[in-house]
Image (cartoon, rainbow, N blue to C red; front, side):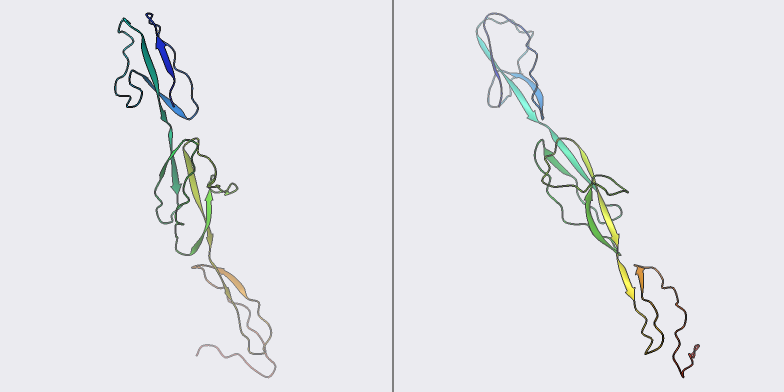
Length: 170
């Protein structure tokens, strides 16, 4: 879309109009290719029509994977949506989504949102937890423990069992 202005034997430099999400690219004498820009220092000797050129703004969506596998940035046209990338991976963690705020992870990103500015999205990671269960073979109960990936188990108190003695060191 462009505007059309006709100059009739007068020459006035018209201020360009504003168009949200686009950058004004100048006035041109050709409507389709926009190869010939108009020189406002040229005297007008006949009726002419000038066409304004608009270039859609593009914004960069940067994905900060927070030590996960790399995710490529995306260039998005104004008022278009970003494509949700393949989830990154990180040893010992599950991916928890993309967020607009790093560290607090309060605001998840909705990929149906129209992009109108540059944006950095941050990967949230949830540490994998494992359950360690202690089987006491009919001895006193020992509570299980939830252990973060790559962490160690806290040794529980030894269980007791009537008529038995625990032997260690073998």
